[in-house]
Length: 471
Image (tube, rainbow, N blue to C red; front, side):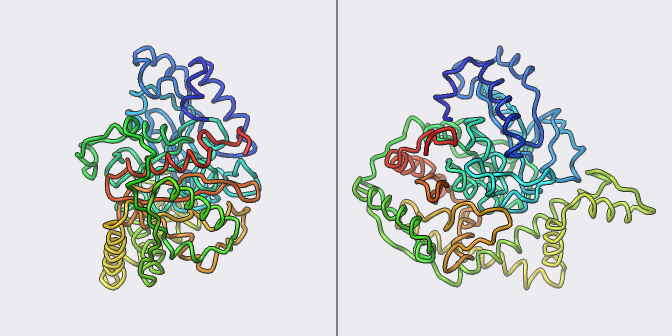
């Protein structure tokens, strides 16, 4: 479903149809943590200009985004009793644009995962094949767009948490430049890597959404003062002046012939439209450092960010004979073993004796990685590669991605280390499952991503693609 299709329905009917559809699909997909009362929001539309871009549009928020009076758990047991007392900046922006939130979507617990299998409420299923994962951590949001429930959903992206689920679900996943969208009111994972982004099923919708969400917010000091462009109005799929760099570190490692053929066919079509297509490689040692550097930095920052989840300041409390016992018991019961493991890694990196040799060293390597990416993007408009070397894996299935899994399945963290804008766009199907490509551009060059993405959309014919549309 895209915005245009959604607008053809009566507002009240549109919202209730989406809500009932989400409830009907919940047993199969398990994508929702909490359903949200829509009646007061519908009533509030009387004060909203009908020309607002999201007017009467049913949408979904990832469950780490605060909405006043609504439970916000980040799919963690420890936050099961937390009801937000305020709206996140993006929640306010969406309401002002006329959106109606129908649900809070499941995610990997506290954003820590890439499969959406470790949510407190259980794993999220891929609507194209419910025996397969949705991808994560924004899997619930991706699934609710992919299944045709809503045309838009908010996600967050710390490593590839929007862009990988977008590929597995056959939709568009947009991660703008760091600071382009305020993170005020969003439960963090790793502050230097976290981005707010979203899912749509058309490039035009993605462009419109960024116009609504982007802009300075003084409550988030990392948000940018840069003027917000008229992205939708400036859409242009002419590729004659575009230089596209194929990231060979990824493409050369992929072993699935159908995925490779799909990519090569698309590149030929873009070249026929006038684009200059060339091959590049980033330093191989740095590419292999992506995952360990990510784990060190992300988990260290997460450990600091979530130190208040102790059953005293925040979270469901478990009894104990002392304050320390309450904290230990609350965190032991309230957090999954996967999250506790990440906190151990993060704490180890932050020990005074380890900070210089582990955490500071990881930061220095991150800088080298960003400089290597910048070197390429100084010469090209975008770097492009398959978003995944596989279709969405089955639950508990070990990913056999390619000759170099650590690179092919983790390279999109380049966009988080650098803060550069990055988008995943669907390109076709393999074994009846959707696949997609990922592009990364220079800072604040979202327009470039939208324009090239529009050309790809025109070539694939996948605008408005969801499970309800024949593949």
